[in-house]
Image (cartoon, rainbow, N blue to C red):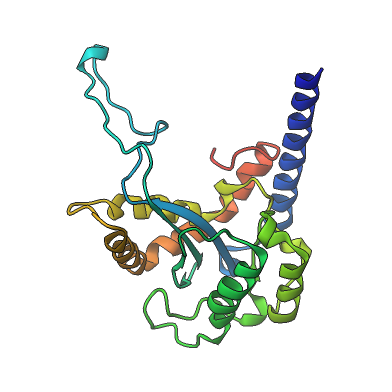
Amino acid sequence: MLEAAETAKETSAHRQALAAHLKFAKQYKDLTTEKWDFLFSDECPKYLFQLPNPNSDIVWRSQESQVPPAYQVKKSSKWIIWGGMTSRGLTGLHFIPQGQTLTVDYYINNILEKEVKPLLCRKNVNEAIDERKLFSSNRHMTFVKDGAPARAAKATQAWRKRNLPNFGEKTSRPPTSPDINPVENLWSIMDEFDYKDPTPKTMKDLKRRLKQDWKNIPLSTVHDLSHSMPQLLQNVIKNKGGHARS
């Protein structure tokens, strides 16, 4: 009985996630690429020793015995980084101190106050990718959030209402929709460079590499990722709230 109840609960949660995904897609499906003045952000763990990805790290051999062993560190140190993007550029890259959890207070005081709010003061479109003006107009800036506890807390919503010009619950992003958050793609793109030879040997090396790779992301990359959103939303509608990748 307990197992059946847990299954029913998971099914209900899945339906709710699909409905939220679909609602978001329908709400913004008619926006042109020029009007995607959205700030997408997220956190991501970056490990000192890159861990194999069972979904994409594939070795083709005719026999199992020919597959070389994949050695890995059982437990790797990591940085948790936060970053955001629009079609015009990037936020700064924020490193959450090791051992620090993303509490409401930390999120408000160190990310919203120190990383997001200063974005509204950027004036020059010709600066470096992580220092340039990110919005066509601050009045049209929309900070897209998900349902993670620190971001959905009442104190966080109150801060946004006081400090962001285009705040509203309608700007929420469904809690389980990484496929319509372009920053997820940025993390993957960075992976291609974060562990290139010479690979980082210390946490200090890794931090230096991550900063360098963030600043070296081409402007064309964030432009293309943001401008893929209209098609992704059409795919979500086609798939009735399912995956955005056709």
